[in-house]
Amino acid sequence: MTDNAQAARKHPDMWVDPEDDPRETDAGASGEKAVLLEYLDRYRMTFEMKCEGLDAEQLARRSVPPSTMSLLGLVRHLAKVEHSWSRRVFEGQVELPRLYRTDEDPDLDFNGAVADDAVIADAWESWRHEVAHAREVEATLDPDATTYVHGEPAAVRDILVHLVEEYARHVGHADLLRECIDGRTGQ
Image (cartoon, rainbow, N blue to C red; front, side, top):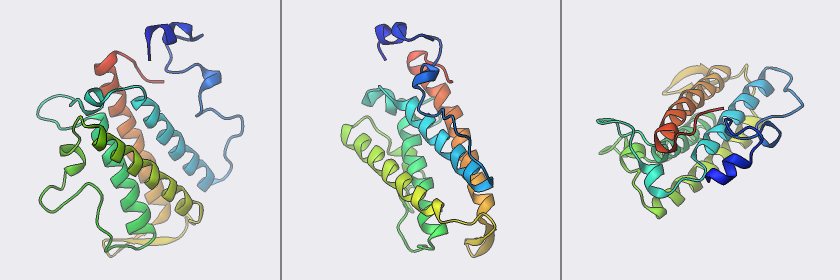
C-alpha cells in the first residue's frame, strides 16, 4: 500500500478501515459448525490480506536465520494443509500425492518458496484452489462424525478446531513477517 493510500484511509493506523473490512459481517454465525467455519474463513481472509501488495522478493523474504519461514512459504504451507485435511483425510484420498512435500524434502513448502513470479503464481493458485475445495467439503461435514487420520479415529470437530488454530498461528506469523517487510501491523 502506498503512503498516499494509507493516508487516505479514515483509520490509517488500521490495516483496513472497518467499513471496508471484508471479514466483518452484520450477521453472526449460529450453531457450532457455522461458527467454526466462520472463524476459519475469517482467518483465511486475514492471511490473504497480510500478503496483499507485496512483490516477489518481499513475499519470499525469510524471517530470521536459520528459519526458512516467509509469507510465500506460508501460502504454500497452508495450501498443503488445506489439501491434506480436505482431500486426504475428509475425502479419504490417502494415496493422493502431497502438495509441496517430497520424501527428499518434507519442508518443500518453505524451502521452495523463492522469489520467482511463477512460484508465486503457483502458490496462490494452489492455495485458492484448495481453499475453494475445502469449503465445499466442509459444508458437507458433520462435526459429530468420525474420520480417520493415519488409521486412527478422529472427530471431525477436532480437525475443524485444529484448522482454526493452524490459521490463527500462521496469521500471527504473517503479522510479524509483514511488519518486518514494511512496518504494517495487524488488525
